[in-house]
Amino acid sequence: MTPPADDLPGRDEFDTPAEVDAVFRTQRRIAFGYALLFIGGVLIIPTLTLFTDWWTTGRLAGWWTATFAAEGPGLYIFFFALGISAASLSSGVENRMLGSLEHSAEDDAE
Image (cartoon, rainbow, N blue to C red; front, top):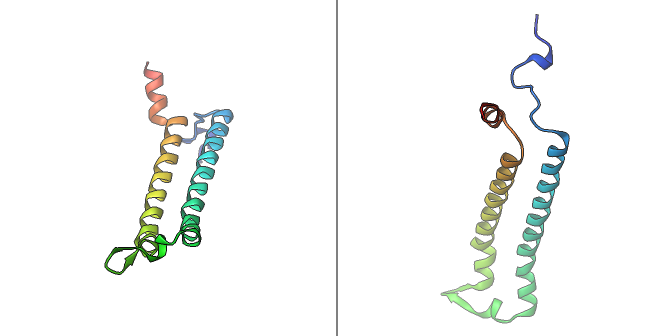
């Protein structure tokens, strides 16, 4: 016979609904902020192309223009850095704001 779901290990509740709601709202703000940063990073290239001459005609090194450098490796680096920073920030916020088995055991010992 299996024990009831409430008696299974790891099924204890550590966080109140208010704490979970606060984490959700914080994560949503982080996501909107990074979405705006993503959109801004993508839209800056065509904006600079439309409004500046040096962006498409100036040479950085050899045949590399600023546009090519930004669109080629620049966007990949930007997306990688954006993804890593968003993931680490979201993970850190969740770990700090929500309890876990380790945190509860430490709180009980004090």
